[in-house]
Image (cartoon, rainbow, N blue to C red; front, top):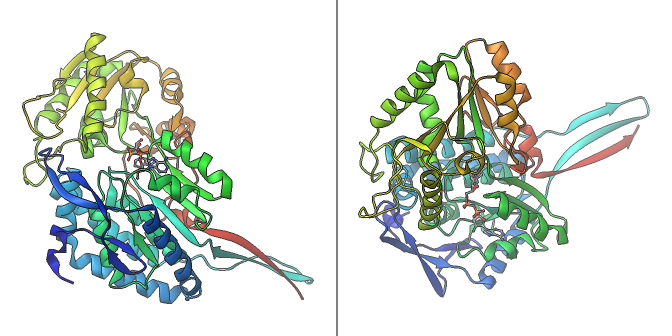
Length: 476
Ligand code: NAD
């Protein structure tokens, strides 16, 4: 494959072939605000074709052995590896994240993920054996999976869906976010050189393709990552065909730094936990609760660490904080800064957007001890703005952390690990890290409680959700 495919033009992949579309749309570079490329905008008919091809491909793909599918997935990982540098660069260009510290690790982790998933299987389980019969539990593929992805980690979040869906025998159509379609179109294109036609298609276009997928009779499951609001639309739309759903949605994660924490040592992790990817992280620290006994020193040290960072174009190797990804998000973030200002909250770093600067840059902003009912505490900011909130009493901070419609992740920091784990046990979220943050792994189940999601990704639990349990009882 020609290496310069990453410079465009970009194509849909439908039934194993590259396809242009009659319409196209602009994709912007968030570091400059300028148009980066044109992406093809799929028609409803093109999406139909991709779904029909996935349905056809399912007949033979689902009949392959695990070993055969494993070979295909490893070949796909090899093909992606060949294009690792170009894919990472394109990711920075369309998403804005720093190349060295974010895009390259995202691509590397994605490739490694495919290989690791390829090495796992869901074997037939004997769930009961008596003199009378043997009972087997099989995990059979569902059919065509529709993957719908957001713009914050476009490569990783999509390949997190591709690998388990394909290894378990399903085929897939991916619809990337209209804000970041390019890297997904490219890895779709690369897939065509190694996978049978129709097994993996990428169809880019507007938001209207989403409802077409979620209502489609030939899609057996929607694996969706995005906002809670859109997730609710997906549930309603999928009801008509009783689709399987996995929804990874929004969050408002609390980090609780306990009175005995080695908070000085934790500052870099807490900073990146909140500000990494310019705060556009579903499990980003969005509320940082610290104990009053070290309030002033903590805020000063956090701000000092923040001042070491350079904001700018992610292609610049010195840059550690990129722009936010799109104009819509940029405008939304402004409403948080306006609210902070209007309510006289104490901003100890950042707070002002430089409107003369091109691109969607929000300076790292630290808000010192805003009230619990502040917008920046209650809502998901998805931006490099962190409220540092003071608490006195551990019982009280647990209650405040849990006082949210979200329940995605959270973290607890303390020297007494047992006490920290006891706090972790009481957080109403799907994932809690203790003295570390944001570790993910193919065998580590991940999913939101409350309005942060439905179902699980990763682990056996996550892989099983790409299958139907099927019980066979055999009389002896
Ligand atoms: P979004 O909900 O606006 O869009 C997500 C995807 O849904 C896009 O591909 C979009 O085109 C599509 N879509 C839009 N309307 C649709 C509809 N009616 N039916 C079906 N699909 C539709 O989310 P976003 O702004 O792209 O992403 C940011 C959000 O995603 C944040 O809330 C963040 O917390 C969340 N997120 C969650 C996780 C997680 O794993 N829990 C990971 C990353 C991001």
